[in-house]
Length: 188
Image (cartoon, rainbow, N blue to C red; front, side, top):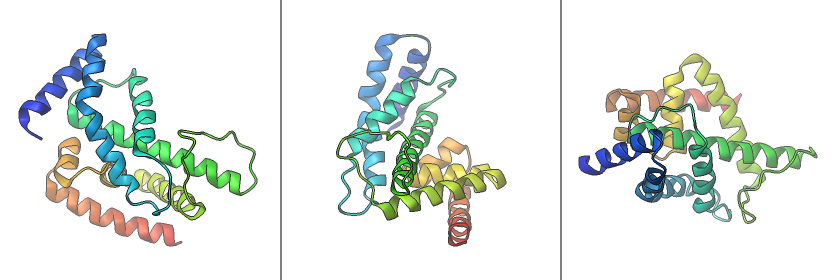
Protein backbone atom coordinates (compact mmCIF):
# COMPACT_ATOMS: atom_id res chain seq x y z
CA UNK A 1 0.00 0.00 0.00
CA UNK A 2 1.40 3.41 -0.92
CA UNK A 3 2.46 5.92 1.75
CA UNK A 4 -0.16 8.48 0.69
CA UNK A 5 -3.00 6.00 1.25
CA UNK A 6 -1.52 4.90 4.60
CA UNK A 7 -1.36 8.53 5.75
CA UNK A 8 -4.94 9.15 4.56
CA UNK A 9 -6.23 6.22 6.60
CA UNK A 10 -4.24 7.37 9.65
CA UNK A 11 -5.72 10.86 9.25
CA UNK A 12 -9.25 9.48 9.02
CA UNK A 13 -8.70 7.35 12.13
CA UNK A 14 -7.46 10.40 14.03
CA UNK A 15 -10.47 12.45 12.92
CA UNK A 16 -12.84 9.61 13.90
CA UNK A 17 -11.26 9.43 17.34
CA UNK A 18 -11.60 13.21 17.72
CA UNK A 19 -15.36 12.83 17.31
CA UNK A 20 -15.84 13.45 13.58
CA UNK A 21 -18.83 11.21 12.85
CA UNK A 22 -18.36 11.49 9.09
CA UNK A 23 -14.80 10.21 9.47
CA UNK A 24 -16.13 6.86 10.71
CA UNK A 25 -17.91 6.36 7.37
CA UNK A 26 -14.74 7.35 5.54
CA UNK A 27 -12.71 4.87 7.60
CA UNK A 28 -14.99 1.96 6.73
CA UNK A 29 -14.89 2.85 3.03
CA UNK A 30 -11.09 3.10 3.20
CA UNK A 31 -10.44 -0.15 5.09
CA UNK A 32 -13.34 -2.44 4.17
CA UNK A 33 -11.63 -4.21 1.28
CA UNK A 34 -8.49 -4.79 3.31
CA UNK A 35 -10.52 -6.19 6.25
CA UNK A 36 -12.37 -8.42 3.80
CA UNK A 37 -9.02 -9.61 2.38
CA UNK A 38 -7.82 -10.44 5.92
CA UNK A 39 -10.98 -12.45 6.65
CA UNK A 40 -10.79 -14.19 3.28
CA UNK A 41 -7.15 -15.20 3.84
CA UNK A 42 -7.95 -16.74 7.19
CA UNK A 43 -11.10 -18.50 6.00
CA UNK A 44 -9.24 -20.05 3.05
CA UNK A 45 -7.52 -22.20 5.68
CA UNK A 46 -10.86 -23.69 6.71
CA UNK A 47 -12.29 -26.95 5.45
CA UNK A 48 -13.52 -26.73 1.83
CA UNK A 49 -17.17 -27.25 2.82
CA UNK A 50 -17.40 -24.57 5.48
CA UNK A 51 -20.09 -21.92 5.08
CA UNK A 52 -18.64 -19.04 7.11
CA UNK A 53 -18.54 -15.98 4.91
CA UNK A 54 -15.76 -13.37 5.12
CA UNK A 55 -18.40 -10.63 4.96
CA UNK A 56 -20.07 -11.85 8.17
CA UNK A 57 -16.70 -11.98 9.93
CA UNK A 58 -15.78 -8.46 8.78
CA UNK A 59 -19.15 -7.04 9.82
CA UNK A 60 -18.96 -8.56 13.29
CA UNK A 61 -15.36 -7.35 13.68
CA UNK A 62 -16.40 -3.86 12.54
CA UNK A 63 -19.21 -3.76 15.11
CA UNK A 64 -16.68 -4.56 17.80
CA UNK A 65 -14.13 -2.08 16.45
CA UNK A 66 -16.54 0.87 16.51
CA UNK A 67 -17.37 -0.02 20.10
CA UNK A 68 -13.72 0.49 21.14
CA UNK A 69 -13.71 3.61 23.32
CA UNK A 70 -10.42 2.95 25.10
CA UNK A 71 -8.26 2.67 21.98
CA UNK A 72 -6.13 5.64 20.98
CA UNK A 73 -5.95 5.11 17.21
CA UNK A 74 -2.40 6.00 16.30
CA UNK A 75 -2.11 4.69 12.75
CA UNK A 76 -3.37 2.26 10.14
CA UNK A 77 -1.09 -0.54 11.31
CA UNK A 78 -2.42 -0.40 14.86
CA UNK A 79 -6.00 -0.41 13.53
CA UNK A 80 -5.41 -3.58 11.52
CA UNK A 81 -3.65 -5.19 14.48
CA UNK A 82 -6.75 -4.61 16.62
CA UNK A 83 -8.95 -5.86 13.76
CA UNK A 84 -6.92 -9.09 13.61
CA UNK A 85 -7.45 -9.58 17.35
CA UNK A 86 -11.19 -9.02 16.95
CA UNK A 87 -11.42 -11.59 14.16
CA UNK A 88 -9.53 -14.09 16.30
CA UNK A 89 -11.87 -13.54 19.24
CA UNK A 90 -14.95 -13.91 17.06
CA UNK A 91 -13.73 -17.15 15.50
CA UNK A 92 -12.59 -18.62 18.82
CA UNK A 93 -15.83 -17.63 20.58
CA UNK A 94 -17.80 -19.30 17.81
CA UNK A 95 -15.62 -22.42 17.93
CA UNK A 96 -15.94 -22.67 21.73
CA UNK A 97 -19.71 -22.33 21.50
CA UNK A 98 -19.89 -25.01 18.81
CA UNK A 99 -17.59 -27.27 20.83
CA UNK A 100 -19.74 -26.83 23.98
CA UNK A 101 -22.90 -27.59 22.05
CA UNK A 102 -21.34 -30.75 20.65
CA UNK A 103 -20.60 -31.80 24.22
CA UNK A 104 -24.22 -31.21 25.24
CA UNK A 105 -23.71 -27.79 26.80
CA UNK A 106 -26.67 -25.46 26.93
CA UNK A 107 -24.76 -22.26 26.29
CA UNK A 108 -26.40 -19.56 24.24
CA UNK A 109 -25.22 -19.81 20.65
CA UNK A 110 -23.47 -16.82 19.11
CA UNK A 111 -24.65 -16.60 15.53
CA UNK A 112 -22.85 -14.27 13.15
CA UNK A 113 -24.52 -15.57 10.07
CA UNK A 114 -27.17 -18.23 9.66
CA UNK A 115 -24.93 -20.07 7.21
CA UNK A 116 -21.90 -19.99 9.50
CA UNK A 117 -20.57 -23.38 10.35
CA UNK A 118 -17.23 -24.78 11.47
CA UNK A 119 -16.63 -28.50 11.40
CA UNK A 120 -16.42 -30.12 14.83
CA UNK A 121 -12.77 -30.98 14.23
CA UNK A 122 -11.93 -27.43 13.12
CA UNK A 123 -13.74 -25.94 16.14
CA UNK A 124 -11.75 -28.16 18.52
CA UNK A 125 -8.50 -27.24 16.73
CA UNK A 126 -9.28 -23.53 17.02
CA UNK A 127 -10.05 -23.85 20.73
CA UNK A 128 -6.80 -25.78 21.28
CA UNK A 129 -4.88 -23.11 19.36
CA UNK A 130 -6.49 -20.37 21.44
CA UNK A 131 -5.59 -22.16 24.68
CA UNK A 132 -2.00 -22.58 23.47
CA UNK A 133 -1.86 -18.90 22.46
CA UNK A 134 -2.95 -17.88 25.96
CA UNK A 135 -0.12 -19.98 27.39
CA UNK A 136 2.36 -18.49 24.90
CA UNK A 137 1.18 -14.98 25.76
CA UNK A 138 2.15 -15.56 29.39
CA UNK A 139 5.65 -16.57 28.30
CA UNK A 140 6.25 -14.26 25.34
CA UNK A 141 3.49 -11.77 24.44
CA UNK A 142 5.22 -10.56 21.27
CA UNK A 143 5.34 -14.05 19.76
CA UNK A 144 1.64 -14.41 20.54
CA UNK A 145 0.92 -11.11 18.74
CA UNK A 146 2.96 -12.29 15.74
CA UNK A 147 0.73 -15.38 15.49
CA UNK A 148 -2.44 -13.30 15.87
CA UNK A 149 -1.40 -10.87 13.19
CA UNK A 150 -0.01 -13.41 10.72
CA UNK A 151 -2.45 -16.30 11.21
CA UNK A 152 -5.69 -14.61 12.23
CA UNK A 153 -5.08 -11.25 10.59
CA UNK A 154 -3.43 -12.57 7.45
CA UNK A 155 -0.86 -9.78 7.58
CA UNK A 156 2.45 -9.98 5.79
CA UNK A 157 5.80 -10.09 7.59
CA UNK A 158 6.35 -6.42 6.75
CA UNK A 159 2.90 -5.35 7.99
CA UNK A 160 3.40 -7.33 11.20
CA UNK A 161 6.83 -5.74 11.72
CA UNK A 162 5.28 -2.29 11.28
CA UNK A 163 2.57 -2.96 13.87
CA UNK A 164 4.99 -4.42 16.41
CA UNK A 165 7.72 -1.87 15.64
CA UNK A 166 10.35 -4.55 15.07
CA UNK A 167 12.36 -5.67 12.06
CA UNK A 168 10.97 -8.17 9.53
CA UNK A 169 13.78 -10.55 10.55
CA UNK A 170 12.52 -10.44 14.15
CA UNK A 171 9.00 -11.24 12.94
CA UNK A 172 10.26 -14.19 10.91
CA UNK A 173 12.25 -15.49 13.88
CA UNK A 174 9.30 -15.05 16.28
CA UNK A 175 6.93 -16.66 13.76
CA UNK A 176 9.16 -19.71 13.37
CA UNK A 177 9.70 -20.16 17.12
CA UNK A 178 6.03 -19.55 17.94
CA UNK A 179 4.86 -22.15 15.41
CA UNK A 180 7.26 -24.73 16.84
CA UNK A 181 6.23 -23.92 20.41
CA UNK A 182 2.51 -24.02 19.57
CA UNK A 183 2.88 -27.32 17.75
CA UNK A 184 4.48 -28.89 20.82
CA UNK A 185 1.90 -27.34 23.15
CA UNK A 186 -1.08 -28.54 21.10
CA UNK A 187 0.40 -32.05 20.72
CA UNK A 188 0.39 -32.55 24.51
